[in-house]
Picture 1 (cartoon, rainbow, N blue to C red):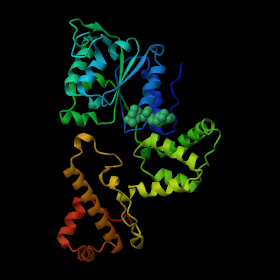
Picture 2 (picture 1 turned 90 degrees about the vertical axis):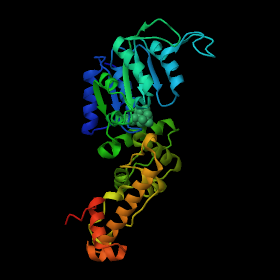
Picture 3 (picture 1 turned 45 degrees about the vertical axis):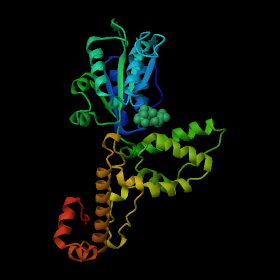
Picture 4 (picture 1 turned 135 degrees about the vertical axis):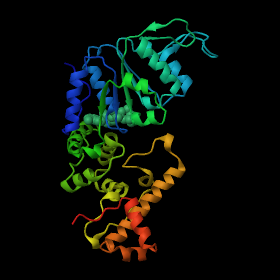
Length: 346
Ligand SMILES: Nc1ncnc2c1ncn2[C@@H]1O[C@H](COP(=O)(O)OP(=O)(O)OP(=O)(O)O)[C@@H](O)[C@H]1O
Ligand SMILES: [Mg+2]
């Protein structure tokens, strides 16, 4: 069997993904791959394709988020000459170009709703019509879609059609973020150190020592494997880990839930502008990027950290803490419960 680009990792999630690829690669069932940015969705799609009987045929990728509605439609389905002003030549769409092979629809969650209806029709009938054409053409393409949105959430917000979701999402691949499978980090590092060392004239990266590895495992990696690659490239150029490690410390927003158990060693809250509106290391989608929401999330985070900090410092003496914070005892109790502030486990 052929292989795609290597999928590095030893975590149970990655093992399961490898297994699932082998099970479904020759079925042609529609697939949705989900996960945050940079987790390897395209790597999985390439592996499915390379292990399928379609590997000799085209693999065509369309990024649904990159084009406005009209252009995306003509990109997917093509057009006849004269279909619209400026259509001087007939042009093939990606559905036609991918015939016999794979059509990889990246960022499917960003496909405008009208185009979702058209896609549903193609999936149901196996036929499509280029813009300006009366005739429908048969298509035999394997659809693999990827998304970094939670499509079920998008359905609730009426941004994604439920019927299309069920058509597309026959086999689900979910790739967890890197921070939830930190056992993969050393393997990825070794793999990329070897790759970059030979790529960049044998300039070598120092293997991280255990203290650095610990820092790399504690970091929240919002850009996932792609971000790790960039870090390694920078280490290669700078010739040292020191600078990078300092930055990771600064960027890390993990302090939110990890208050120290020692009253006198309470962590000073640290925020970067982005950590304030990153929810669990994840930026809100542009659709929900409302300033009001962001303000509320940021203020809640600051309040939570500040209160947790004072509670730690006072050994959870709530009466004293409320005086320091200059709020009433009752308000403090309410905020502790509302913001989900946890006492130490001891
Ligand atoms: N498990 C892995 N093993 C080896 N390389 C990986 C792995 N996961 C990701 N990568 C590498 O990380 C980079 C990002 O992966 P990819 O482009 O597949 O992510 P993505 O999920 O499609 O991201 P986006 O949502 O931003 O499009 C690529 O260079 C890819 O080769
Ligand atoms: Mg991608």
